[in-house]
Length: 420
Image 1: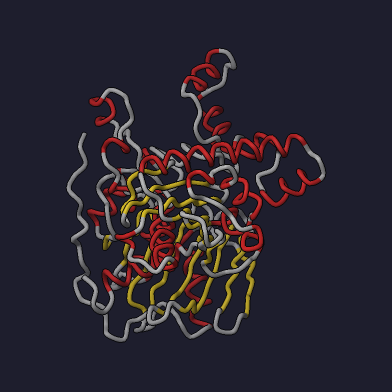
Image 2: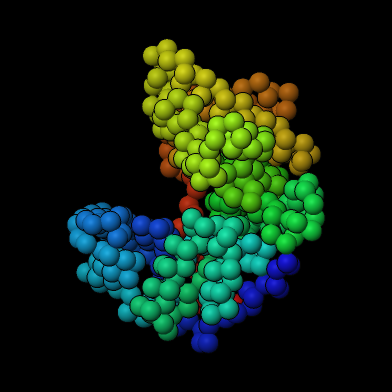
């Protein structure tokens, strides 16, 4: 079954007020909501918060007013997302930046899976909601929670534009040769089996910021982006457009991650069913929650793994080596895909903070023009920076990702002053 044409032309009935300069960003999980309120004139965070353990008895709301640095915590019983978002709205109101403010231009929502239908920021209406729901079978853990957050926010502010920003959108520019799996075409099309990719807002932000760091336009630069957190993905970006990425139909494919296996022989699943007498659900849990670094050594925190290595722990060393081996393979593969590489950019929790990972991933790739300066690599900071020596043909960068700013920027460009 083919996907319908993109409904991204949908627009709010009325343009945002000229005084509406704020965007609220919501990231709704199954039992949590992360939020940030940004002033789009300069990207200032007016408030940042997290509601955890929704529907699990005692919930916790942690709210930080970024202008003063004050953090308030509130333990309560939030039975559902409606209660959680109402509590969020109360905290924002305490700061004088409530949801009823005329300065609020829109609410931007992170949506994990947009399939092939959604290729850009999209104003949410009934048709869009139905399509996100139709995609639940390919994102059963994420899209339902995203939908819950959207519907709750729409009830709170039915008059306000709500915009969906899709993790998969940045990767929809992949050519068919990269996006298709080599399985029967009719079967693949019927069940929408293809490589979609994820972490798209991060890859978009980091690839563009890397170009800025090099003093060039995104259209002039080829970048390999390595988003290394508990979830990890790589992308090959040519002239600002993604041409390949490591995650596939789901976020399970690709790099070794905190709890996910990444690439495995598909026959492993059949073997575990036949020989291990494991159910589909058990195998799913194994590959998504009990594999990767935690499956290899019992830890998924790279800080703890490197500490154990320093103490001579061989299991931790093996886990680290497997992690780096896979990472090197993708760097080399995407170098071949791009043909010319201007920069390799590390981002996310591990990529931004684990100097040993960056050094090990680049070590031995000098013939490809890659090198890391030890002193520069050891420096910690919150700004984009180069860690390669001046003589390196290919720049190596550390670029802190900012998915919330990317979501807010795309949302405001669509519905704010001067938007579509």
